[in-house]
Image (cartoon, rainbow, N blue to C red; front, side, top):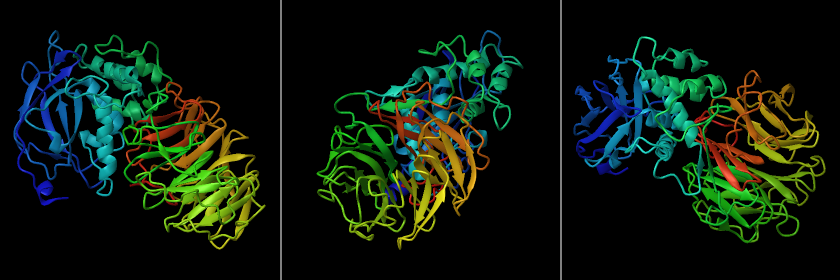
Length: 578
């Protein structure tokens, strides 16, 4: 950060209007905040200091000259109270609205803001993992990237210059659940129709979640978003009629909000039967493609980084993908070099491995994982073995691999806290040390995915049994479940809150489980029935708390916005909060 960035000059005033639906909100108290950097949901600073800003009879306000600590500081507006219902009169103290503006350096005297229920819902979804009590937004000092990416997502969802959805930066060919966003905004709007001591009672009752009943409109939005499967029909019933369009005609299955990217044949990133995905340190999403000979990369807001993907000589029938600590991309090629190979790309998509690495027993590889020490574990499906590569692709394991023949039909690999590889294979899982010593544990029928949580427990997606299996770090089975819509689970991971997610390949949904209790968080049918999931295969969670899913048969990537506990990326061993 430059000296100029760390102490920028004061910024000229800007203006805005606070509205409820199409009605101006008069007498509302306006605050202008810089997001905090001392932890999630804390540390926000009111840049107005002791100055008071109140909306006039037309809902208008003016923010005086202000100063941020850096041009990259994330800033936002909050409006509290005010009269939005002239017919009945009276201020509504339960009215709290928000508009996420983003980089402080982007705010100027030409900035105009329309803050309403749409911008509030958009901010609540995008920043769900960063909003604390009393509208405080903050992130840890080590997660400035995740916070900034969340503000960019908010800008995709809503245009704060107009108070409408979606935002002007939403990538072309994106399918966003705009009607769902507008419907939640309409539910918030009914809290002011008309103003009375019980105006918000119906909404707050329907929006009651795990933290109890909300007391204002922003907290109502957050409660719905953080408990998306709790009361979808009841919340929907509060939303009619609506000042926003389009809106849902029937109640949603849940209140997860999705954006689906890659909906075209050319120029949408090169997706062609996409398999696994991985997320780099900047929040970019990389996807392996079975066909096409390219790897796809999307920015944290869903824009293809390369219109038709990154080509490499060795890419062929690719399933698995991982990103190492240097943001290099490792991809398994089931049939590259006739018996399989592993391709390495740089963080910018340059081919670093030519025809691919094929030593160390690589034979029809289908999955790959990177350790914090830079080594690469590979699951070799055809010779039932494990391969270990050095960071430059040279083989560490022997020419027949580790545990050759002992890992029948191995399909997935994850890394424990000691950098050992854990492999899912037909009938169970096995731990393989870096010295090649293997220990096997029966647990499952035909697992397709394996992952660790932050406590070192092992989680297995048992595709054949349509269940999720939890094992302790010693390999003993703790429990199994098919709750929360688990059905033919393909990929699995634990998020930064300790909850476990799976893609349900044949059900076209995802499931969320409580990692401590194995109880379902998602509803009986799972999440995502309103999204464009089609053969959901790969799975990842970024530092903003967004869940990313590759759709094998849709040739798309879907983002569930703000749905999970934030995860430090890339994942190198046990998952951690950023």
